[in-house]
Length: 178
Image: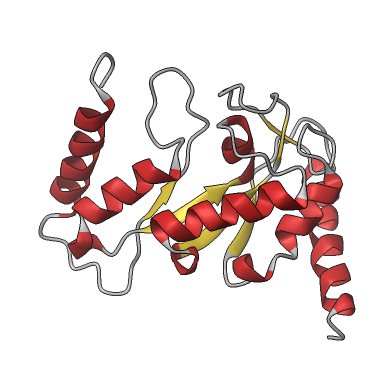
């Protein structure tokens, strides 16, 4: 809630999830929390926030959707191998990499650590194609579903972005001899 302290906002988020799921038989259904860019006073831009919400709701068996553009603009520098490793290590420490079930795969039109949410076409933004290739091929993320979340400004944008993702994955499979 606007003007609330972070701790209160995290508590209210967890309580709201519990209320929304009360009485539901979730079975194998898994709700995923997505990291945010951190615009305004939003929570969720630090993996620690996701950990706190997940820890407060163990009965819900929550997972995570990792958004590449959000992480980048929230201050996780994905552009170099060291930054990607540090980001995945932070995910592991806070939520467990195995709980990252989906990846919103996109470049960022906004600058690093700007806390501005602007998705962009694969390889055409501030994260860049080589960094996104490393993410798509990273073994600690191989179990997750990769979902394009890029703008559709012109006819063919979706196909172009999907082709880029496919080429990243296929190149990785060839490198592994598959």
